Amino acid sequence: MSESFPQRGRSKRIALVLSLLASVSLTLCRLWSDGGLPSAFIVEQAHINRQPSPFAEAFPSVNITDSLDSFSNLTELVQLQNLPVPRNLNILFMGDSLTRYQYLDLVYFLSHNGTWPSPNDRPNMVMEKTHRNGWTQFYSFTKSALQPYEQCDCFREFNLTTLIENRYYHDPVRNNRVTYLQKFGKLPFKSNWNVTEVHQEHRLVQSAAELNFLIQDADWVDAIRDFVCHLSPKPSLFIFNAGLWRDHDLKDVALQQKIVQALQACNIPSMFKTTTKPKTSAQPTWDEYERQLCNLTDYCMDVRWTALVPESYYWDWLHFHEPIYSMLNVQLLSMITSHVNFDVVEAIS
Image 1 (tube, helix red, strand yellow):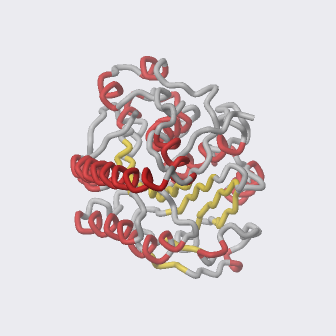
Image 2: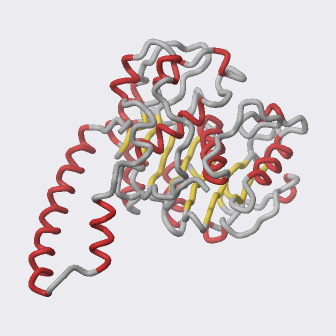
């Protein structure tokens, strides 16, 4: 299992497990006298006693990635092919373009029967610059590639006050929901849509005149409290990262606490993803705010291994060619499918 748990998270989980075991024992004693177990309990027991996730060994642990000295050594340990398509995922990403491309890579995998985007595709799912007519073409292309599963509340021009990109993926057959909400630095979160209507059919906005923001001045906490917590069903996991914006506000310790508290208030587990390394960085170091958030959130996705990625895998100084986003998502799936909240049983079809 490739994950980095804060010490506080370990203590909470140990207490939870002990409480669960005591509750199960008491329930078994009561049910024994009634002559059997209800079917729902049997299903849960089968779920808890399932075989290890096929993603469990698909990405090395943090202890191993910390010991590697080359990208080739890492790729030998990562399994990208012949992976099953998970079901019952309900996760939400919030962040900037570093997070957007990871989202697009993941939902492509989910919607294309376990196939990852190719680095040679033109235009490309994770390279906006390959779309000659700019962002409108990029949004149209990605939405079309993900039909009928994704709705894109998306518009972008040079005016930062109007840019918006929120994506909502839903596959009702596999019961997968993946959401991406855009948060650039200190710029506020915006939404054109009512939170209850995000999975309804919407046409792409073509001009700024069509924008009608229902939410437009939300910071991290406002976005969680007023939008994320009202999604139905609520996400099973909130994954967030601020990217490399110089003015991002996740360095504010008080804000860190408020974000986690807002998620706890509506019972959504938190995962902080450390920031992928830029092209010019070769040091797998932590920023202090990353260490703080990894100790505060329920889960920490440690991606310092991206310091090993050669320069040839970048298409600018921040963003990757494939298969880097696919590797990030295998790491993510190896973490979340190792927990009983998720069920990876669907074969590739």
